[in-house]
Amino acid sequence: MQENENVTQKFDFISDLDEYFCENYENYDKLCVIKGYRMPKMQDTERRADGSLYSYTLPAKTMCLAKQEKRAEILKILKTQITDKSFSFSFEPAGFIEKLKKNFKYSFKRILSETLRKCAVSEEELGKELSIDQTTWKNICAGNYLPTKNLIFSIALTARVSYEDACMLLATREMEFDYTLEREVVIAYLLKQKVYNAEMIKAAFNEYSVSNLFITWLND
Image 1 (tube, rainbow, N blue to C red):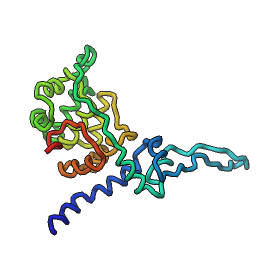
Image 2 (image 1 turned 90 degrees about the vertical axis):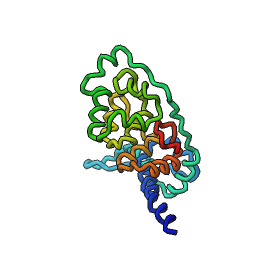
Image 3 (image 1 turned 180 degrees about the horizontal axis):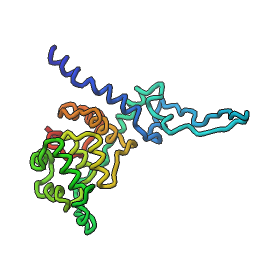
Image 4 (image 1 turned 180 degrees about the vertical axis):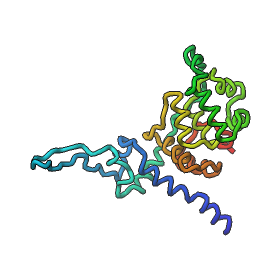
């Protein structure tokens, strides 16, 4: 009985994740076709000081799932439709320009080194937590190969990187979190809330069908 209570408490965060997801998920095209979703009014009218009326479009956030009366039912349906299509297990060699920039202040190589130093994790220690061969990992750290988005997410979760530092790592590759993708909303939540416990991450990923990351213990 005690064990069941501990498991329940451990994963109470899933309801908090659901709330965050409803507030921040931005794939409104996908949401609006789910049964039970009611399209909100997107135009409004106000009267100016001179008495004339003018119309304006409400922000896209008006369509967010959190504002739906049946959000729990809609979210339940959405979870059954999620498919992680982010399969990417190859790494592109850095081109001539990328190699020239690898020692620049805002290069991936420099930002990764600074980030791991803040997290008190070495490149070697982190490499053991990632399901890629060590030669490839060393080349990525050296700036000879370009990291994928999935690898940056894997680094962030295994090295306990802050959301802000994860954004910095993504920016070195001219990338950012995409809140129209379910997996990236979930990963953003985990980093913002500093959820680094392996079992809790597995639970969140299972809930939202997140896969294709380079983390060794995800398959344990």
